[in-house]
Amino acid sequence: MKTLYIVRHAKSSWDYPDLTDHDRPLLEKGKKRTKKIIDFILDKSIQVDYIISSSAVRALETAKFLARAMRYPVEDIKVDPQVYHADAEKLKDQFFDLSDKYNSVMLFGHNPAFTNFANFFLEEKIDWLPTSGIVCIDFETEKWDQIFIAVSHTKFIITPKMLKASENV
Image 1 (cartoon, rainbow, N blue to C red):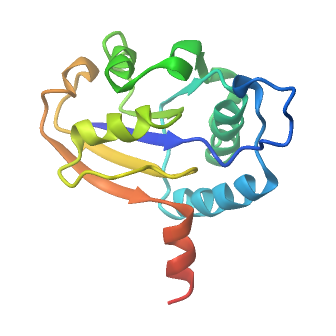
Image 2: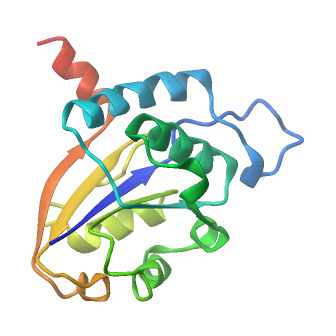
């Protein structure tokens, strides 16, 4: 069994017009919303064996934020510039050479690629993966390069807004 967590970066700032899109940092609001996701992850005792992140500042900051919370070594995050520009089809490349010793992988990046990539596996497609949203999918295989043909099961789709709504119940 392999488990994949597809994570969209936290809400980022547009307050610095001199910065490139790649270099935009997170907003405090984005960090607060991500804290709700972290609380969910910790409550479910989620741990991952490997983290891959886009090289964009907002994605890598989000990856580091979650990694620290899960006690995953930040220095072990694979930072891949290809994820920043990848479309959903290109994201598949991340899994062809991925070591099968990892049973759970968390991938951080951007829309629209991440929504489209998640929809490869989801029976009920999503329109848009919001910032700090996570899609978790299990695959009935022991090989990462087989996830695209393996039977898959959606474990959860969670967003900060969903967690806020559950607090009000």
